[in-house]
Length: 237
Ligand SMILES: O=P(O)(O)OC[C@H]1O[C@](O)(CO)[C@@H](O)[C@@H]1O
Image: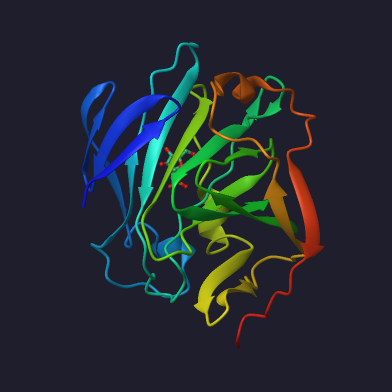
């Protein structure tokens, strides 16, 4: 199924595997259930695609930044979790760890942000038209907890490679998100010493005007409003 999206002022037609972008027709890179095997408690259906990554497709007038688009499919993983991204950290840059600016242009995504040890966790729902800054030093996973595909974009520095190892070693993020009658439930990953899971809202930034400059905003900015601690279930033994 093809989707049309306007992303930061540019028109895209996205389908599974291929996209018409301002930079031409681009083949996507699939992330399969097999590649997510290390971040799930149960593997299976190896060849199925969880999300399509279209990297370096947003025109960026500022050298040094890369703009990607991601089509996150709806559904469940073999572990029973909602489809999610692999998750990664960013390494050190000249002013601390690299940040990343994300926007959602279709659907809704639940971001799982966690500090370097995975002890402090923020769950942030980001809706169509909203932006979220992944602050320096925070690992991030996107969960598609809705029944429709989600389309996101991100601006990030070209000067580093993402660090996937910690997520593989600990079998995913600090928490897992499963479907439930209320919508979703959050379960602790026993491989971390999770201290708190906060329910947060991104600051009210909307994709209505040029936003590229935000990728350079000072890192001290307070990017979230955290409202409450979330009830988290222990992992069943
Ligand atoms: O790199 P992951 O964890 O698979 O996450 C997917 C998305 O995040 C990015 O790697 C950017 O952080 C995108 O290029 C990609 O589409």
